[in-house]
Amino acid sequence: MSYPCPTSCPFSVGPASALEFPVGQLHRFRGSNAVPGEVDETKRNVLKLLVAAGVVGAAGGGLVAGSLQFAQPPTVGLTSFPRVQLLDLDGSPLTVTNVEKEYNAGTTDVLTFNYPLRNEPNFLINVAPAPGTSAGASNVVHGVGTQNSIVAFSAICQHLGCPAPAIHYYPPGMCPQSPGGRPFYIHCTCHGSTYDVTNGAANLTGPAVLPLPQVLLEWDQTDDTLYAVNEVGPPVNGHLDTLSGDYGVGTSSQLSKQSPVVACNFPS
Ligand code: FES
Image 1 (cartoon, rainbow, N blue to C red):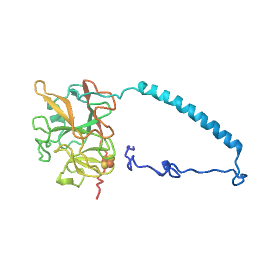
Image 2: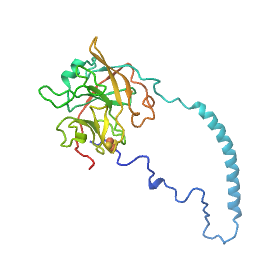
Image 3: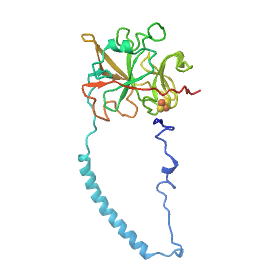
Image 4: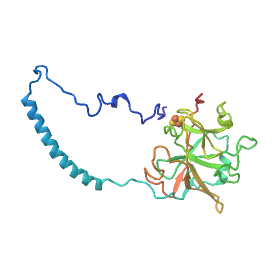
């Protein structure tokens, strides 16, 4: 199985797209039988025709462009962050009780839900220690639940945009490295960036430099349900604005589960 991991910056210009000569420099092309200094009248007439056609075409093109600017569809998206109920893998309402029973800092499954747009996946992670262990954390930044340990972060890397499961949460002991002294973290297998799940997905090691956007969760204690209500941090990678680029998920978003892609590759 292969994953869409870019190997280089997609914004650099490759040799194939480079011009052969500087813009504005004129080149003269001659036929093999041309006499130096002699004017080819046939070619001159063809050129005159092309120039005339260009003038007419430019005038027509201006009219068409003027009309098209009113025909372009508006960018799809949302005007504000919605309150979206999270659903469990089976479609039932996701509850804090279930999350704390099923998932903890030792969970290797990649759990994601889309928010606020359909093409914006996010991790759901509970960093509370597994029963009988001490590896984990509580009262983390923007954490919810009985230990303030349930968090959600964009599942698209802030380096070159590798998505889950190429980027995912690494429980304690999955790799021997402890970037920034953290034994558990989010790691991107594409080029090795790591993020701190206890501190708003702050960047621990590059090549990424920005944190992952964090989805703000709300715990409704009247019925134990969970909602995504906002997002903080930089825009989701690949989007100029987290609210633009696709349709919203609606009033609910269901968890999905994938197997992790484990590779302990870290830039030296
Ligand atoms: S895409 Fe390069 S580290 Fe994630």
